Image 1 (cartoon, rainbow, N blue to C red):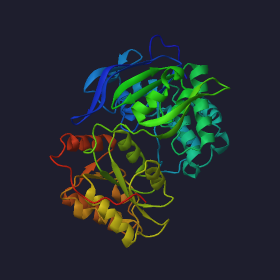
Image 2 (image 1 turned 120 degrees about the vertical axis):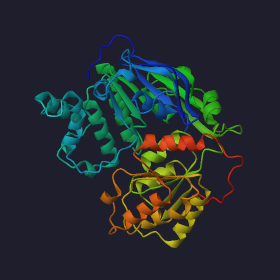
Image 3 (image 1 turned 30 degrees about the horizontal axis):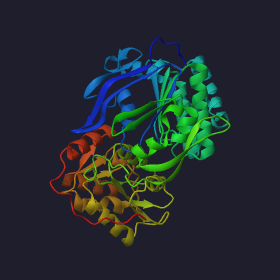
Image 4 (image 1 turned 60 degrees about the vertical axis):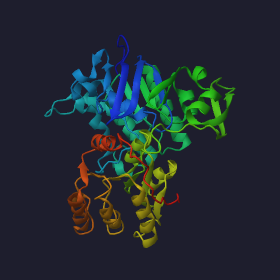
Length: 443
């Protein structure tokens, strides 16, 4: 990757980002230099993901400015942006079982015009980054055959293939075991030090942030509340004030780095400023389709429920990791009456419904059918990419159920931005009284 750029790689000056009238990021200023590894931390709803998406141009600031290498991001084309910054999302679910080598080669697209062929340099870069992330022996395998940890490293490899001087990572250790977490972050830190690549990573784990980052920036309710070295930032007081957790501060005798040992929730645990009105939002998914939606909405501060999800499904694991009330069904079983009843309670309590682009088969068709009675009174957002026709595996009944939802008033959205804008408008004005509804307990 190319470094050596004079001045900061990234600069945010008094940036605020809104979803409707709700403020997600508030007056944030931040500067990142070449070769610096900055960890963005904070509780769910603190604005970490929103900051990264604003840098990428997915959200326009309501005020303030964002610069990449001295140039306003608004002045950069998509290709110019892709040559300066690479992006590793929380999770990604490839729809096609492309060869891993070709999947990583996608990272070289910004260097070519539409009709240009790959060069020897492109192939050399792909071989190198696959080796760097420990996947050289899997280069001929389909990307869908990779494990969760291998797929996350494949996403990193594709980003590294862009050879950009700035790398953004959004919860890159999601779904990784501790060994793969340490391995991935060690590779990223080595990249920042040996090639002067600037790294900004959103991390939930303060101890991982302290171990690998040069700086820790703590966000709370969209504002920066701490910024400095791990030793200067981590404290028992910070964890109690921002996360509402009582902890002991210890020092690693080998590295001298601080780490926190949580003990219990604080009596004065902070609450989200948007509670109790930002939600609940009920997310319908399955097969991993809802995972990025759940994590993005959780980071934006929404209260969430989910269902019906099958046990051992990746969406179910995500919902469990976020401690969400969830309607559950046995693995691989058709959705039965008990799960449907529990799911209807969650739908009844919802102030909004989001339907992920999940594959619809006979075993989960009920997830679409059970949304229909609630659409006239509960704002419902349907992710329409990929089209329902491509993921309907129940002889057209999935498409019929989808069209019934649209006819009843559900809104089709193309992605996260459409969903965020719709929810932002919905929750910009809280109701006069909170809705009274029964909520099924978490299973």
